[in-house]
Image 1 (tube, one colour):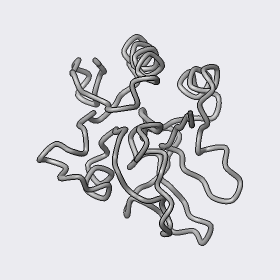
Image 2: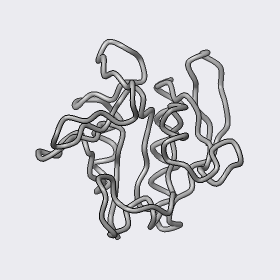
Image 3: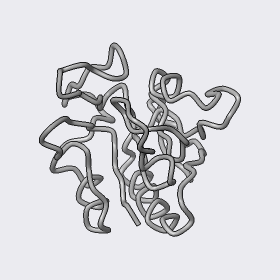
Length: 152
């Protein structure tokens, strides 16, 4: 798909998801392109630049989908990412905050005035939710502003 990055130029990237969700993701990234919502990058975590590391991907502010890993916070349950049923967008601008207040990725700061930050009333949240996706920004026990998932 195509997206505008923070350099205001059009880029091409890939988000790997369950093939049953590919149409939803294409629709979302079509809207991202039309709205010129900046996305830093869209590089699959399997790419050698990321090396299957969620930490590396998030530190690069990379937007990604499939990543075979457990849920954040430990445990053995696999995440929605491991099923190809989740997408993270601009994690450095839209961090995960644990129940204890830990911020991930480290150094991430949420500033709603910065382009690329996902807001509760944004077209992005409305579009994802209209297709049955859940936004981690609405969770009450923790918050994950960069995370969208649709369990099948």
